[in-house]
Length: 170
Image (cartoon, rainbow, N blue to C red; front, top):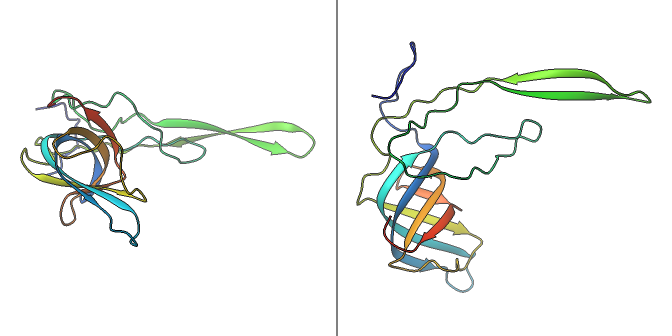
């Protein structure tokens, strides 16, 4: 069992929405009809999946920071980093320039996901690209690795996922 600090408990089930990385084969592609709002929908037959830690955000803007190197390695625990994030804010005083410095500390919560993958092998995941009539390179029978905010509220779905086309089975 992965390392767990005193007082922390591993979730028994996954939340309704969380970041995930999924790999699998495209089993179906659906194009939006003419006259409808553009959307491109893909059904992915899941082969591997894992949760990702919550997205890190830029301390000043709050925008998510794109992370690279995400992989489907089953050996690493994806619990969020429990180290505090510190940012410095400088206040501009009229005519004097930067005179005050404040330090803001954001505590990050440690999320311990269940020990099993979020989507079982063989399950189906819907990927939807809003505002796209087609995504180049994605076709039935191909293999994809995707990451994004996975919603398990009804059927598993990820909207506007980051994707990587894989030449062979993952």
